[in-house]
Image (cartoon, rainbow, N blue to C red; front, side):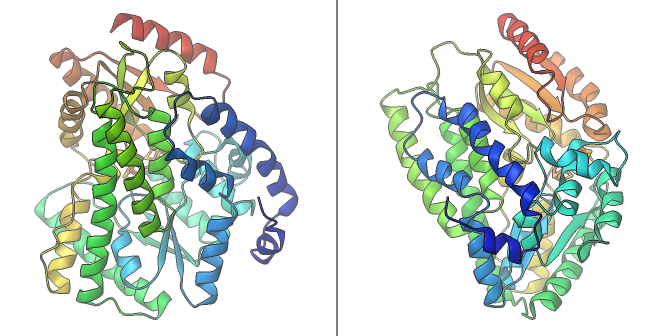
Length: 422
Ligand code: BJ8
């Protein structure tokens, strides 16, 4: 990797501590990703993106900022990228997926809470994540209690805007979320100094829809009997979608899909015949959290789909493109986003329908319900999901685990037993 120290210094980073992080990541990635056999050629781009994770993209963001563009960091798939892009801003997903940041998060947060929140806050306050350091504003949302209270702590470090997400899905809630998107649009206009017009929003609605369609194309290849790509690789691509340049990402994923579709025709598979196909559902897996996928795919299973925000929740359902005025565009955005079935909603039966539908679409053999510790909404929702799946005769197990690798052996044993049974 080129020398980015000057750049990192200009972002007010803790260089010494950041060095520690840079030392572990390549080996960690190498062990998990580069040991896979028959990886598609198209994954080379993603290897490159990871090797430059704190380099090239940060340099690009820095150049954009020098040209007056603003960067918005977010933590949830409810924050509409379309609005940021329409004001010529850049959105980056910032959820923390590394154990490295947890101790710093614990300096200001209770220990007994979700590692995603601790890592996200820790990444900011430790000054070791250049994406946080490149953001001009963070956008939070009132989803779970942990997140909404964490924003109150983060606002001491960086300007925050918090979107009020309804907790139910009635007509009035969709109307409320439309108003929230409008308030967010006004904030983005204030920060960027650019107006969001119906024309610019129409264009970015199309652009973000194209990104969704590209990911849909990728995921469609995972429905094939012979799997042309591992679950681990597919997860990595979804994670990169949150911060890469949108147009470049679309091009690279489409190139990869050409290769994967050829593989399907030629019956090339990265797994041996009869490998149990797993639908993974639950809490999001922020980069570099590859733990569950790695454990599943080294215990004899293959992940064929993720019903998660780093998965189908991110790209299923498109925004209606046929609206010419801002008011109807905002309504269309609210409609699309309020279709996401996060466990923060009550009731959330749509998620159960999604899981059953995806299980069938991807020809899965079993469901693994993955939850981060102290995520009450997802943990509680397991009961309803389990009952519904059992009624359908779909095998399911719940695995609650954080980012550390201490429980890896124990999870392996449980997975192996589950794969034998299905
Ligand atoms: S839409 S899943 S990205 S809120 S895992 S921090 S819920 S305690 S991340 Fe999420 Fe938006 Fe929902 Fe998706 Fe809280 Fe649970 Fe932690 Fe979570």
